[in-house]
Image 1 (cartoon, rainbow, N blue to C red):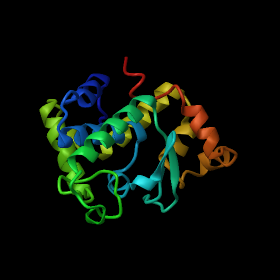
Image 2 (image 1 turned 60 degrees about the vertical axis):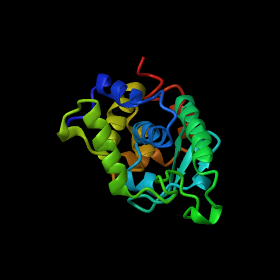
Image 3 (image 1 turned 120 degrees about the vertical axis):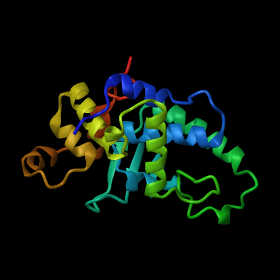
Image 4 (image 1 turned 135 degrees about the vertical axis):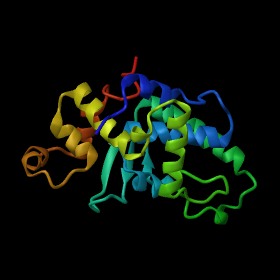
Length: 197
C-alpha cells in the first residue's frame, strides 16, 4: 500500500477549487470528504442529508453494520456549505420527490451517486493531478487518512475508533470507555485538511 504524499494531497484538495460549476464543486467535496473523514466509498454513496449534524457526520451504512460518527473540520464544513448552496441553485427546478430520499452526494440528474461513479471521479481527478494510477482509487483516501491522522494525533486507538474497526481485539479494550463525544473532542485540532499547511 502506497498512500498519497502530502504534496499529492494538496494537489487533490486544490483541484478546480475556484470553479462554481456544480459538478466541479461536488467532485472537489468528494475528494475532501474521503480524505477528511476516512469513509469508505459506499459509506459516502449512502450518506443522506439527515446523517449530517452540527459538527459531525453519522455513518449508518458501514462495512460492519456498526454506525459511527466522524467529526467535521471547519475546512470541510465550509466546503459542505458551498456545495449545499451550489447544489440548491443547480437543482432549483428539481421537484423534491425527484431526488432519491435526499442522498447527500448527487449525480448531475439529482440521483444518488453510486460507488463506481465516485470511483470514476477519484480516478479522473487523480489523473488530472498526475498521481500514479496504482494510487488512484477511493480506498487509498481511507489509508491516507489513517496514516496522517496517526501522525497528527499519535493515537492508534482514536484512529481505530474513527475508522470504525471492530475486529481489532487489542484496541477493543482501550476503546470501550470512549464516548462519541470523547472522540469528537480528541480529534479537534487534528484535521487532515487543516494540518496541510
